[in-house]
Image 1 (cartoon, rainbow, N blue to C red):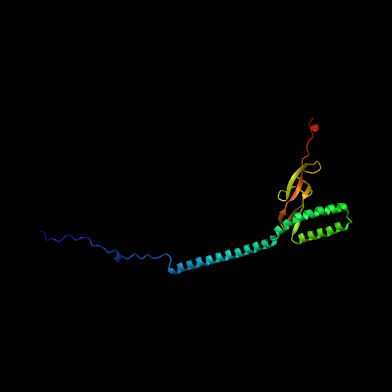
Image 2: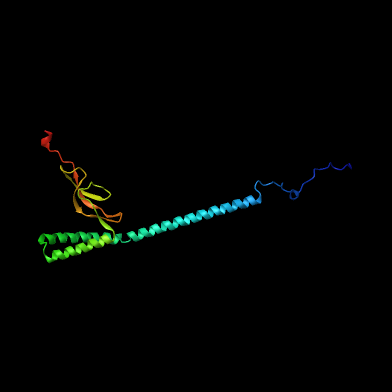
Length: 185
């Protein structure tokens, strides 16, 4: 038998005995704290700005709601006003000196004042150029004395509530005069 000791095996190293190398950080602790403070300050400023924008937006929306809250009611009143004006025209045809006509005229004035108090104005149409945003054309009529696209007749008045359209004017628009067959020959 051989009494020689086995060759010296390589020593085993326990991983828990190894300490990680100490790396000098590029940022000392004071710099990282200042960076953290700057980050939170920026977040606070942004949050404050978002809150201010939210408040302004809510104020605008609240003002719009107040300004246009009665739009549906006023829109529903317009056909009643149309019918009342037809009755007023019929009473005028009878006699402008009759008590019925004068009473209807006073009520008509009150309705117009009521609408004006709420910011309702009539859309100007007669003699104006056709604007599809304000007018609803129901017919075209050839006209030699008006330019093409000019409103010749208003069938139903249009109205605005402040700067919003409640109802477009229903109109008849001028078209180019039709040429006759005699002119072609």
